[in-house]
Image (cartoon, rainbow, N blue to C red; front, side):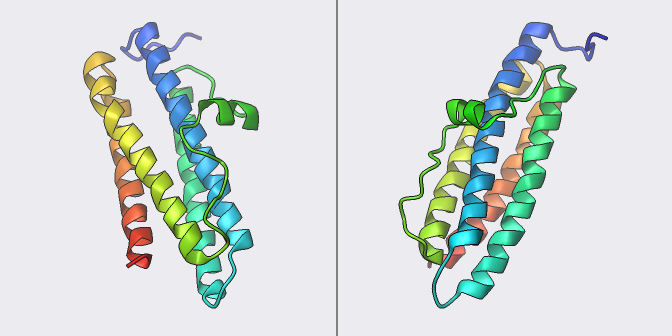
Length: 157
């Protein structure tokens, strides 16, 4: 059955394409957070290991929400590692070592990158593509990333 939600097919396709890039970013960030959880070392290992687990569980929910938003628009969500790596704005490589501060600094950069990507698309979603639902959805998502980035950034002071 066709998706008839008051948004033209071409507009839904454009929004789904942008959300697919966001989904790739969210998925790569999930994997990087999982890596931090598994591989962190140092005197603060236990507390940071637990904190990274909380973060990757939260990140898994964000991944699912973005994929489901794409489906709500009548499109299929990319779901392969290859497609994520082709679509993402993030790098999958970790370059800052296995310390908590190294992982945290890298995760802050990735959250900030996602925040900027979302902020750059909100107006287009609502004004160009007439999709207030997605604009509202990504605004809430951006606010979640802003809070996570703030908390991570606080570790670096």
